[in-house]
View 1 (cartoon, helix red, strand yellow):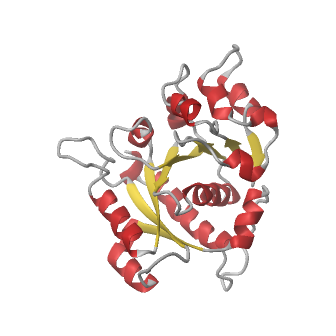
View 2 (view 1 turned 45 degrees about the vertical axis):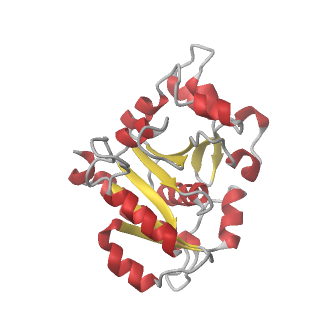
Length: 253
């Protein structure tokens, strides 16, 4: 099962995907984080993975041996934060090529019983990553509370990612929003955004540099007291909403 994660650059899409994936794993769900941004990956550098698993998605997309699919995926992934992480190549040319693969890794993830949180970076209809969105159980748009980011992301969801009429957009009912409360620009008050977005917004992640650093060091999140407004518990709440949607008849039918 795929949960696609998209967003505008600079809002923390990759970190939000990592936090959501780690939180889903903490709730007992076998989870993968697949970095599939065609602009190139950043997790390998941030998380200091061993050279043998850097760019693992490329090695999965273009296998050179006859090993079983599951064995191949495990061989080119890295365990961190309680999940398996598949990184994209850092080079944009090679990262883009992963969306025209020899091996249909998207289909394999969609049919798997595990949850694959797939970080796609920026996306629109017709881009190489769109087939991932089409096969995802749910698409999460990551925005921040800054006015332009919040409004444009909500409009993108409302239009299903379409720019022109007749395009095949995000399947109806399968798009949601996660807000990262980063200190950027002129922001909407949280209460106003939550009131305007309603059920479209499934999570509000605070700006928590200490928790982000821990995630990048591969430390699995531990949910602390609800009285503490930190990233682990906020991500846990968003993950619970995500998992409920994935399990619902609305999303999976």
